[in-house]
Length: 61
Image (cartoon, rainbow, N blue to C red; front, side):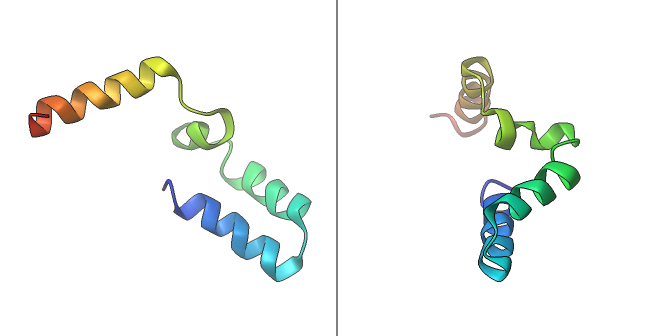
């Protein structure tokens, strides 16, 4: 997802040459989905720390 959403935006922008249209499509179809909040609002320090802890516990690093 971290590459797919930005790639989707890039494809729309390249096809139509319109950054605003690409942004509007993403906001209409992806922004309402809670799992995509990171793309529109960034990732909080707490969330990053939770992800880091998860990987440290899972992979021992």
